Amino acid sequence: MRRLDRQDGFDDLRDQMQRMLNQFQNLGKQAGVTGVPVDMREEDNEIVLTADIPGVTKDDINIKTDENRLEITAEAKQEIKEENEKYIRKERSSRKFSRKISWPTKIDPESIKAKYDEGVLTVRAEKEGDSDDWNVEIE
Image (tube, rainbow, N blue to C red; front, side):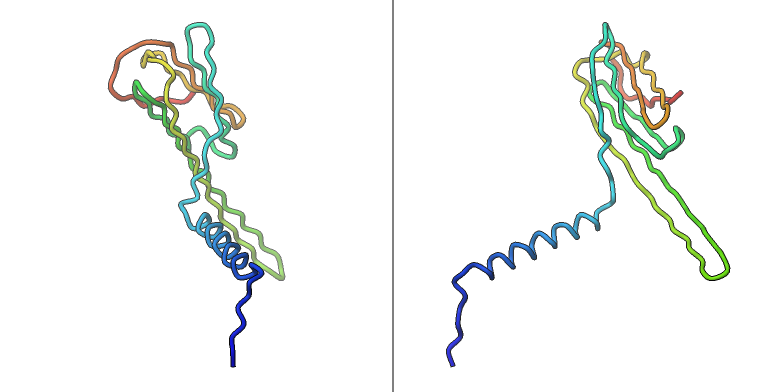
């Protein structure tokens, strides 16, 4: 008996779809780190960065910087527990945020200030300066 080979491209299409599905599933297996969306602008003698980090407290945010770049990391954890006569539901979720941004110019490390308000982190730094490595405290 002779095997019929498909010449119409269905096997190729199926293989491509399987590869895409595998890639999508692998994304979910990664660390679950989400990029932090940021805006950076120049105001007078300052660099001002705003970052959207919803669902965390200021204590969950860590900011490190040196003369070349700024690194923002945060982790949001949530636990929901619900009980009634017929069922018990308990869910946990965790989200991690991370972003490294290069400063567009040298900044003064002593001038760096950070403020977190209603899900938006604002970091301000005056231009020019020399230093090694700094941790930034959030107001």
